[in-house]
Structures are given as structure tokens and as C-alpha cells.
Amino acid sequence: MFIFENLEAYKKAVALAKKIFSANRRIKDRTIKDQLCRAVLSVPLNIAEGQGRYHQKEKRQFYCTAKGSLYESLPLVQLCFELQYFDMAQYEEIYGLMNEIGRVLSGLIRSVKGEE
Image 1 (cartoon, rainbow, N blue to C red):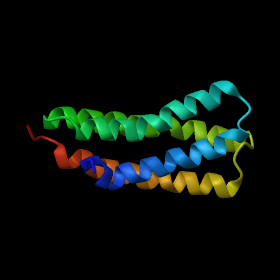
Image 2 (image 1 turned 90 degrees about the vertical axis):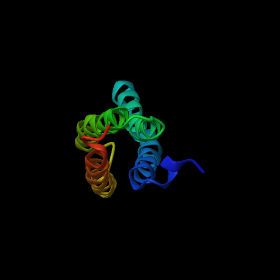
Image 3 (image 1 turned 60 degrees about the horizontal axis):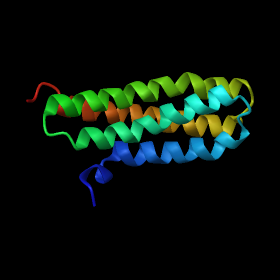
Image 4 (image 1 turned 120 degrees about the vertical axis):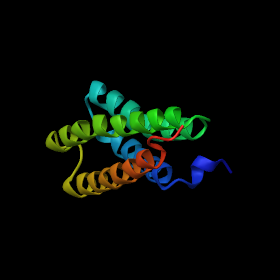
């Protein structure tokens, strides 16, 4: 098992990607669909890559990029809800999971801040 697989941020980010990819079938706009998939997939990928870095400064940068991708995903999720691609239950579940990931990522970023 790789170390990053034990990280709560990684586990939640994979769960988010699975939810988005599953709900994505209902999105008719190809641009929104593509951008949302790329942004949400970037979250666990950057967490994994950051964990593989030796220097703390590099780790932190990848974790910050993961958080940026999470934030990039949120307006797309909100737009999908407003365009009725997601129902209220899906939106609330996805939004809640994104909020949890944001909090966990902030802790992960703080854990490597200032170390080198």
C-alpha cells in the first residue's frame, strides 16, 4: 500500500471523483462535463503526487494545487445544480464532501508548512 492511500484527504477526494463521474452522465454540456471531470480528478492526483515528493516545500505545493482544483470544481458543481443536472440531494452530498475535503486539505497543508 502506498502511504498516500492512508490519507483521509486522498480517500475523500477519490470518493468525490467517483460521485462526480457517476453523476456526470446527466450533464449535457460537454465543456462543463470535461472541465468538472478534470478539476475533480486533479484533487486526488495532486495529493498522491505531493505525498511522493521528498521536500516539504514540494509536498505543500502539490497539496495547495489539490485545494485549488477543489475550489475550481465548486462553481462547476453549483452551475450543474442550477442547470438541474444535479438534484438537491446530489448537490448537498457533493457540496458537503467538498467542504470536508477542503478542511482536511487545509490541515494537510498546515502540517507541512514552514518545514524543509
